[in-house]
Length: 201
Image 1 (cartoon, one colour):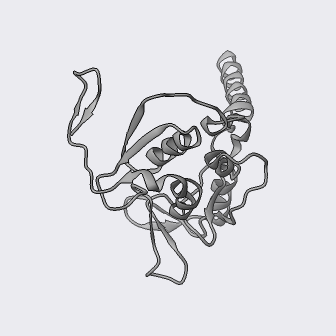
Image 2 (image 1 turned 135 degrees about the horizontal axis):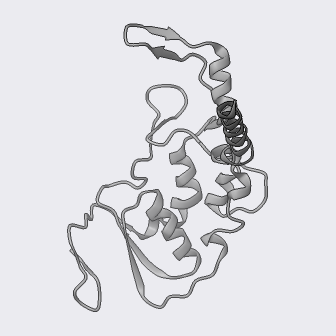
Image 3 (image 1 turned 180 degrees about the vertical axis):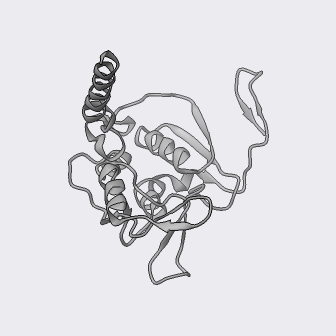
């Protein structure tokens, strides 16, 4: 009898924790987003900054520097910016994301990424919900019930861009402001930290 009581208490405690705390992540974590980001702050720096790589992070860092009139240069190893963000326009009559594809977070995150205040987003999104899924039992695939797919979506709703891509988002909202400071085909193969100045080679 005592074991049943302890087990029941453990189940109730775990359920309470889950319902109050652990579901507040991903698309449900709107209240955990920062009120302001680096794009809302002012920075002063008198030197020159080298950013290695024109991927999403490098471009985002450059936008902060650009906004604060800090001298910088982005060294990009390839002949394009975006890093793992790419899009294909040859396969269909709409652009297809290659690399990043889903928005796993609440849509207002898009405003945070580009430094826009307010609740209304500019981008047109569609909910991304799997229509058909299957499970493998070691011998054969079995289609999952629709309620399992609905449960998965309701547990963690996701979105996708309807008529554009993550590449387009980064290009329009970040790269457009900083691409004039990218030096393409410039791989950094060595960084010398021994001198007072950092030297890239």
